[in-house]
Length: 524
Ligand code: NOJ
Image 1 (cartoon, helix red, strand yellow):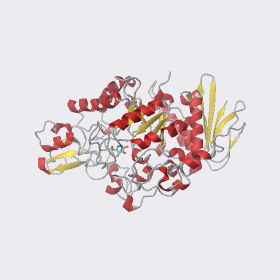
Image 2 (cartoon, protein in one colour; image 1 turned 180 degrees about the vertical axis):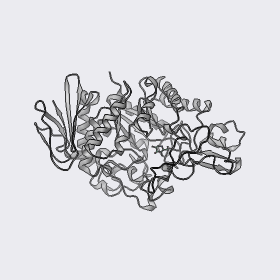
Image 3 (cartoon, rainbow, N blue to C red; image 1 turned 180 degrees about the horizontal axis):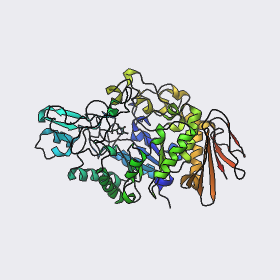
Image 4 (tube, rainbow, N blue to C red; image 1 turned 90 degrees about the vertical axis):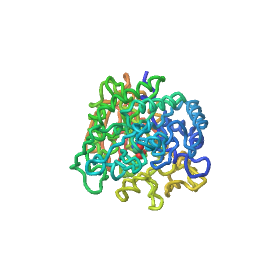
């Protein structure tokens, strides 16, 4: 019997942007609760909510000031408990974001740690003396611009931060830190949380030796300044795996929970995050589709590489969007291509993650300079690194405020909500939303799609075709990646089309020609 995190579909919510209930322009827990029936109708299995813990919001919640509470902007612990109950009542799971690499500078642990070199919690963070020349201990760079070391004048040492200076890295070599963080996991698991998406896991350890990172020969102007150096000594260190194993032990103290790791790494490195004997993450996120050229041969090759790299028994997963990247339509070149991408995501072997709004075809929203909120864009402006465009509020209705808020939204809504919104798309069988609902319904109905095996059938410059099989039941997925119609190669028999990207939820008879950017799922 497959686990829910194998057969199911995950839906990521950026909580500031999902649904506001108190007119402050920021989404909240009560807002989420009011929209749960929408998720049931959509047909997803689990909700992953980006951080909702108390935070000064320097990185919008990824700077946690208290791991065991809820930020007042989102609600209260009582409302959180209600959210868990309401989700479970609908047979939906809840995945929280666990941010182990760093806290906020406002976390009580860091306040204590920076208060004095003699403080018992000094060693909970990474403090170092200046280099012999008086500068930072190494040349390591912050992901969000500038040095990864910040000078603390009162105690005359530098502290390390892989991200913002407001996000000091915890020292995971300290057993007290480990235990405190495992207890954070237990706090939420005991409250009924079904698992965690674990943030920036490959950044958990840095080399103890303080060695400079080497230059990256592939870096060029226009790329993130942090990529000037290869993070050889400051990321993906081998000690991480023992710690993941311990996190897994904690998760396993509770029945049927999931751990999903965020580590954007090449396949051979990423596979190590499943852990020895699969005792690491259940699902190390597979981000490779996000960067793939949008053509049939490279995508087929990517699937081939991924399937081949998976350790025996490891469960695959696929991601097409998240809160750190341009939205799908903007990345793949248009609506037709994005519809095809949706079919790919929801028919490949492995757990798919949908990013809120992707299911209605939301696009990036242009953010005028005065509305920029993302610290990355503020620190390193003009390179297109900013993540506000993909974090704009969910579009529910064509009315002002888009049904998201009756106040002033924290990020601009843009103009799309008058056309792209749940209310209108629910009435239109040809809409993006109808396609997602149909794909999700088909995936639920067909074990071949949710848990079946995968076999590549045909790859041509235009076409990617694969089979999904469960028992004797075989489904064929054929995707035309080009703007010209494309004939399917001869099949062994007639195929009954169960779903096409082109006529929404309406199944049609046998067909051998795919329209431009058309994808079909057929019964063999
Ligand atoms: C990865 C998260 O996805 C991103 O949004 C965040 O800024 C960094 N980790 C730091 O926590």
